[in-house]
Image 1 (spheres, rainbow, N blue to C red):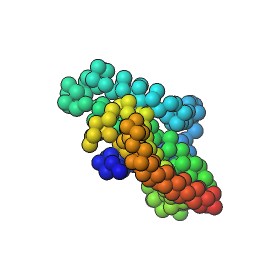
Image 2: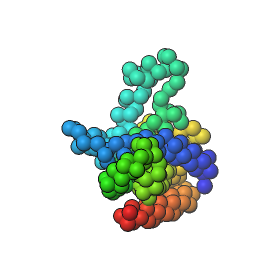
Image 3: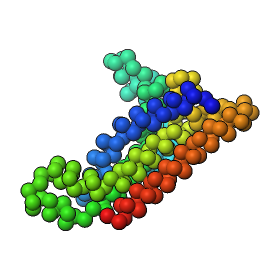
Image 4: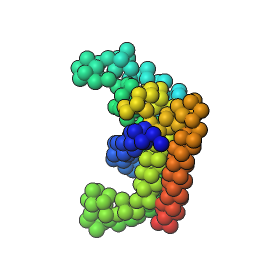
Length: 220
């Protein structure tokens, strides 16, 4: 077992979840409530990382964030920070790649909340923030839980995007998925089996949890 790679993957998954959860709550609720021209285009953009090949998405992120790109060179010049081939690059790529896994379940959860409940809350004098905290979030929590679990576990198994943006630097960008690939390339199938089995079990638990959360959402 490559414990260093596993630890890095867990750190990346945690950081991705912490960044995406507030963003997903805001965007998911906004998409569930808003009605505007071009909404379908925004929703398509949210789903795009889900349908693009990971290497394609990783390539465009590499081109956009690399040292020779306008954004990458500006940030490097003014903040002395690189956006590729380090943990920060992995985090940016992971956040972009996991947007649909976070936003879509949350959007569906908020869409399932009857509008008359929020209207009743307003009639009883609750502010928008009070309505969000006391009415909407408790009803939407199964979708939020599902999104959080899927995002966390999906980050653990990311390969193409993180390899393109971060490479395979031990202790800095080499995740457990990349370690599995390296072990297979080295014909160390026993080590690859152990790490792959761990990801399989985590994925199975995540899917079961998301199904449970989705069932609770339907009941509400």
